Amino acid sequence: ISLGLVGSEMCIRDRCIGMISVGTLSPKEAKELGITMKSRLNGDAGVMVWLGFKREGFLEAFNYAELRMENEKGEHRLSAMLRERAVVHGQDPEITSVSFSAEKAELDNCSFLVVAYGSTRGDVGYYLPVKDFLKLE
Image (cartoon, one colour):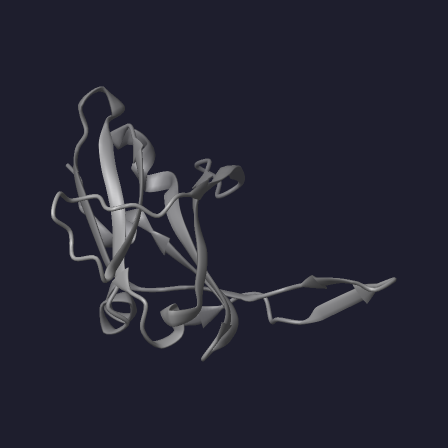
């Protein structure tokens, strides 16, 4: 697990801004943590991509997930909070899922960010780049 920012906290006039440690999970590391990434065609919306995981280990403290898109140079284009919801009919209620849909050509620029404040690993966030997990042709 490669970590970027090292967490700290800054307080200004009784207002605290928390920072988290942010890293990138490889497919192997994600699998060891019980995180899966899957996709399927989604009509006019392109391709639906979703993460699924149980709230165990550091994910027991899961707070939120975001979609992050970058341009071809790796510069931030957009980010959006993702809502938790079942993606598959009859999905196991113990599985937390977050998803988004995008045109296939955009998926190489997309990542999930999964954040867990107060987890067994501290205040952490992990990027899961779609291009590392899915081979879409």
